[in-house]
Amino acid sequence: MNSFDMVVIGAGPAGYVCAIRAAQLGMSVCLIDKRADLGGTCLNVGCIPSKALLESSHHFHMAQHGLAAHGITVQGASLNLPAMLGRKDAVVKQLTGGIGALMKKNKITVKTGWGKLVAAGQVEVDGELVEAKHIVIAAGSTPIELPFATFNHTTILDSTDCLSLPAVPAHLAVIGAGVIGLEMGSIWARLGSKVTVLDVAERPVAIMDEDLGREAQKLFTKQGMAFSLGAKVSGVEVTKTGVAIAYTDAAGVATTLQADKVLVAVGRKANTAGMGLVEAGVTLTARGVIETDAKYQTSLPNVYAIGDCIAGPMLAHKGEEEGVALAEMLAGQHGHVNYNAIPWVVYTHPELAGVGLTEAEATAKYGDVKVGKFRFAANGRAIAVDATEGFVKVIAHAQTDELLGVHIIGHNASEMIGEAACLIEFKASAEDLARCVHAHPTLSEAVKEAALASQGRALHS
Ligand code: NAI
Image 1 (cartoon, rainbow, N blue to C red):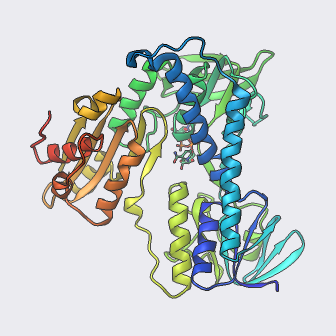
Image 2 (cartoon, rainbow, N blue to C red):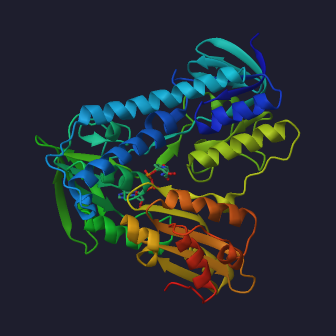
Image 3 (cartoon, helix red, strand yellow):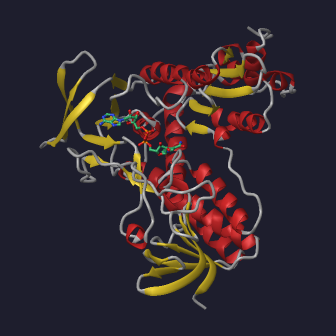
């Protein structure tokens, strides 16, 4: 019984979701992963453990600095780091165990081991041959290493290391003010580290709407993080006391930053090596990801690829949707992913979230656009819960009023971006959003108000 309708290599969100959907559609499925704990990077060393630590560190910060305004005095709040990390590990264990249970429920065969493509239709798992009609590569991604800063996992860290530091570093430097740099920087800054973030770009999270990046820089600087933007890092040296980072700042001045540890978070690269892909005839793009057509087929017939190892944003939910779409297409249905409606979230405090086009992208594509903005400082619920930082920005087509993009920096932005993603998916207009009834008092009223503002008629500002 080593023959299946589908074999999936990689049990991250792309792979295990594809496996479930294929099983739902009647296929026999085998899921292969090198880890016995399913869920890939997302569950084991990515989205989930980082969110657990972001929440815990936020509570610690609130106990120390945020509760006095509510009339609550906390004396002697102290950190039990092993307990905090233990909770994070328990969260991961619960969820990876949950994926195992889902595999059983869907009668998916799980094999733990290193999967290698032998040829179209054949995969080898630690020496065992498995045959399949369809092979899906969902091998994920790993952190990019800078040539002058080899990860030693004690002072030169990747994101995984940052989820389990044995003690709070006095000074944590971060190279890369992207999603990981801001989330990890926030965790350790709240737990007491001095955090200095270096980035070659002119603003943090340059991929998101410019206004969000600028506001984030302002707010995180207020929280105590230091930023050196436009910085060209040229070397990282391990010293007796930590690390020395050589860089040229935006003004062209050569500088050395001393820190205890440095997190390198300059992006991730697709996992393509060691799986026999190229040898079997799978083509990679010039950017090193697996080349696929619109139906996720690689250059080899009946071999498909989804998730971080193909083009597009490296986001768990993007991979999941590709997994569902692929399984449905292979079952003769019409699977589809709308790449214009994929939300982005940075889980800092406040959170950053966006979907659709940024203002710069919308302007480049359509010329004039309508932009409406509404600050949480004018939202009743935000004032009541003390979450007045940030704003919502709505971008609409100047003539048709089609909702092109929604960008939020604010408390619980990750939950509010959902309605915007739905409306963009349904090609709603900004007026549609403005006319939807939003419960009062909620933070989401700011989304409605920003849509009203794009029509020139915000009610509360
Ligand atoms: P990123 O692409 O978000 O940010 C990398 C940053 O490093 C950029 O700002 C870039 O300008 C900077 N950079 C690149 N080379 C540099 C150099 N030599 N010196 C200084 N700065 C340099 O990548 P990040 O944060 O590593 O995350 C990787 C991916 O993981 C993200 O793109 C995202 O798809 C995914 N992810 C998503 C999360 C979420 O959805 N909340 C959380 C964590 C990761």
